[in-house]
Image (cartoon, rainbow, N blue to C red; front, side):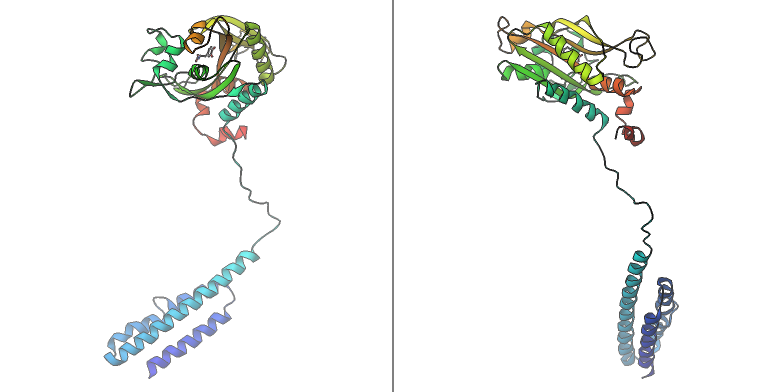
Amino acid sequence: MSLLDDVTKLETEVLERIGQADSLASLKELQVRYLGRKGPLTSLLRGLGSLPPEVRKQAGARANEVRKRLEAKFSEAVEKFSAEEKTSSFDPTLPGTCQQAGTAHILNQVMDEICSTFHGMGFEIARGPDVETDYYNFESLNFPPDHPARDMQDTFFVEGGRVLRTHTTPVQTRELEKRKPPIKIISPGAAYRNEAISTRAHASFHQVDGFLVDEGVTMADLKGALVAFCRAFFGEELKLKFRPSFFPFTEPSAEVDISCILCKGKGCQLCKYSGWLEILGCGMIDPAVLEITGHDPEKYTGYAFGMGVERVAMLKHKITDIRLLFNSNVRFLRQFF
Ligand code: DAH
């Protein structure tokens, strides 16, 4: 039967040509020529319709079988050539494509540095929840019921009467309730305030609070700890200034300014020509806070402090817009890799 003979001849011819092909391109070209829409096998299959039914079935089966076999042969040969081309095109003199390893975000780096500096001074690390009760965020810290910080404008209120903590200070009363002095703790974490976002302020930011409660703790211990920290973190030649201030949970309270790290106190744009930069709040823990957490204020005293991580990071790394710390711009972040 001539049709079946044609198919067999075609198969032999194609197999032979595949064997002779010397490149991927010539192989692809062969594939299109023999198995493509205009190839002999396709037209042969198309012509089957005009054959008598008994012949048609047999010839059709045979042609399809050959087509499948040839397709398999082609893919096998293509694969072999591609693998060869891959290895032969490898140029060992080209520079390598290396994977860029990631690092911690600059805010986390700064937070880790603050914590490890205090850790080296004997502080333990404790954390508290971001969604806080009114009691821990305000009441236990001696905020009067009508204190402006409780205002709708500052605080994010959550269903069920809770708040997004406005500072990390509530960890202080949570830990004081659980422990016996001496207690020496540092607490890093996020805080939230309903503020308009600007170059200097963000509605979600980070703080590190710290405190020490023991017998005989004085303001001199507070000053000693903060001077040691600031010099370790910003540089040994740093000067500190303790300015009287007010916080409901400390008495007396102070804010600490450091000599400007850019102009060293001479006056520049960063320090608004004052020579000083404000970096943290602190004070002696108010006896009311010790009392409400079950400690005898006649026996124990303590100091506390709190700082904004973004503020400290911006000063240390001369970052002029707080939003750069939140918008995940890799070109900016890569500076701190
Ligand atoms: N919680 C204060 C704030 O967010 C900062 C602060 C001041 C924390 C004095 C303290 C402290 O622990 O003693 O502004």
